Length: 263
Image (cartoon, rainbow, N blue to C red; front, top):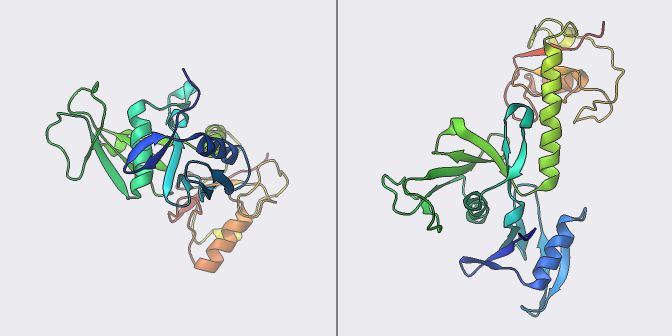
């Protein structure tokens, strides 16, 4: 089996990208740049291939979506085996179709299905059984979710961006470690916002867990939304500036925290 299948959306269909487009695509994903200029011999012109954000897709001249169908993966939360796994062909096709349509959410169904949701897109795969339904949408922090049977309780992450996948996996296992610590003697009682935020003090010493805002102080608290990675000082600054504390990752209002206490 080939390791890549790079296609471009052109003329309302997905077609195999030409040699110049594939080479430019590989160069972009293996570089630190957001764009690369290349010569497309088929179009006989200079083109720009770019990716603005991790979940926005890669485009040629801001018009033609291009992607590697073999590089789409889904995150399966399966206890000790939780990891990113290759997406099925149907998932990869729907994922790139979702990026191309640029809508808030898209519904998909297999051929010969009944009770089809409005505006649902028929999957072009003849081997599928009838009455297969799913949708793709973004969650509150703009991550792209694949949702089986249109049931939000069955949502899983889907992505073609290796950097994002690695970052998410590291954060996922860090959160497991944190939650284990949360049940140990290293944690104090929960502190309720906003009355206690100004009076909380924590000794800032460990820089191995840098705050995602200031990059200098350890993250040492956990928010009620479940996120961490923000230090106490930055949390105080957010609260004092806005008269409330919202998580910078999910934008939910924080009403309590748990803090580390080194004993």
